[in-house]
Image 1 (cartoon, one colour):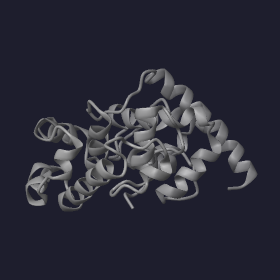
Image 2: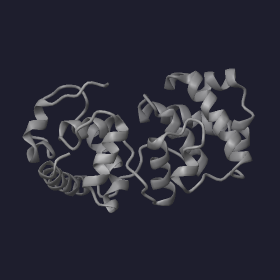
Image 3: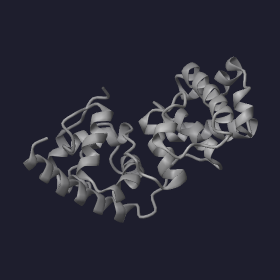
Length: 222
């Protein structure tokens, strides 16, 4: 990104964060969980799935499997049925069971506190790792770029890329670290409550007012 474009983006995202903080001063993750491992499971299940659906599934799942060890010894076929409605159930089941085994054996049942260690866990990419770190330990080693953050980053010209990893790098470059942890959560709420992904008239939306061009930009899913 050029120096001039960087300056424009720094100012724009600063205005966006000011608005988002006012709209959602206590923004928290929309996924339900009662312990660190359950958060790990819920975030993995949320890939290509709505938080609402995940919460419906985990309501029963967390009652059936109450420890990391229970997941580690779960039967693949049975677990697939338990999470079927979240989509990609075979891969998710395989990863969650393998993740449970690693957490139990390598990390003594505790969720690691570093990005490097988290990324070693099956099914954990940067998005999951960043969500886990920010919610469990209030640590920000990056920015979770999910579908909500990706589409708003593109629509508001905060990045030159469409790839989540490159978008994250650009966002980290234009935002102070103190803003990283809440950016994802607030945009998720904003996207759900005010500006959904389907095309609509959003010129009068709070964020669009600071960047009117966003009303005409509707990025594709890929």
